[in-house]
Image 1 (cartoon, one colour):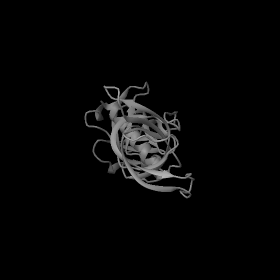
Image 2 (spheres, rainbow, N blue to C red):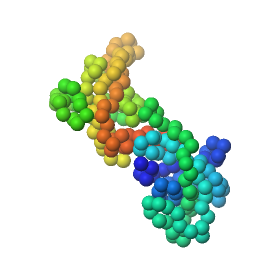
Image 3 (tube, rainbow, N blue to C red):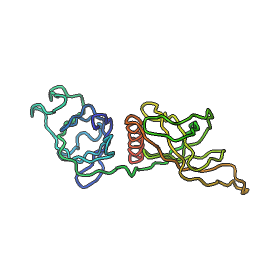
Image 4 (spheres, helix red, strand yellow):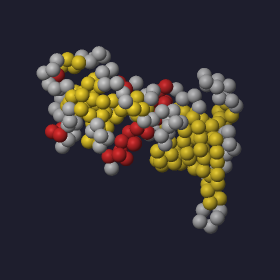
Length: 227
């Protein structure tokens, strides 16, 4: 849910980026943000706030500035406007206007090592009826989304090979299970095949694992937009 969001991107109503801000508190109809010092004096009274929702992904909410002394707003946690932190602004969230990321997940290119654990048997929703082979294979992740991963490995696998691996690049380590859906050889400069490139789909992600993956992808997108 949006209450787990820690960072947002703020844009003008015309879509021009203003800054990235930290979330101090958030509720169903409000958000309290810490604004970078250089941007704070120039913040408009009406903005678009792009944040991460665990269910829908990246969503855009129009925000209307609530000036100090206007009273108290919030349905989940009441905020006193007299107790704000330095460089914070309180915005009322209006009905969302756009959903940027849905189940057709945004993929980002990132390289980091991981260990693949091979599984055999059919994976079902409750985790039963699958067998761990005991073999752990080092791989290099090339890209990732909440829907799956791309990776390279020195070992050749069959398409439809089931696997699990620990994703430890997010806010907490989570175990995921998946299936290889395509493969192709990668040739070196002399034409020798010594690695294979794979695309894999996640299967039956837990709510926690999906939230961690989506949050990671969103935070990495924010970094790219800030550069």
